[in-house]
Length: 232
Image (cartoon, rainbow, N blue to C red; front, side, top):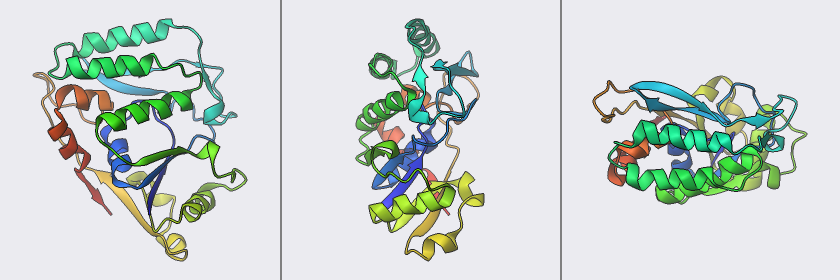
């Protein structure tokens, strides 16, 4: 059993989906503290040849709240505005006719909190990309919020019977192989490779939202991108 644990990010970059695709179970870590100006509720698309940051507006978001406790604003205007922005950015992209309705479906989900919106959007996107990994929410299962940091990660891995835990490369300073190996768990880190693809006639801009990947790549190319990483 291979496990990954990640905070919920809205329409994240390809590396997030590489991790999701390569494990048996992906735990959406939604009962940890929200981080202001993080990636839970925002990402970037390509607009006019440059990265354009979009944000899902939240209601009284605070680092004193857990992610699944953070509600989205009740106003509908931000959804209409974001749909219009994405349409403007990608309407001439080759796979816009297929991908834009999926994006609209995500924006019209009747979710009230950001964790639920991310969870349900990931289900839609992984289904579209043929990713079969089981996706679960930590707030619904493990009841171990008294634990912190690496101890909590190890507890989730043990409860799942994990033999391997994979984390993004940035976690190398947080987790030690010896602690995982002592409990019979192999620890690896995933390192995404920059993989240029045509973005209209612009110079390639990497690490944008998965929307960008899907707008410019058919499913064969997308599958290649999902596998273009190294495990260290």
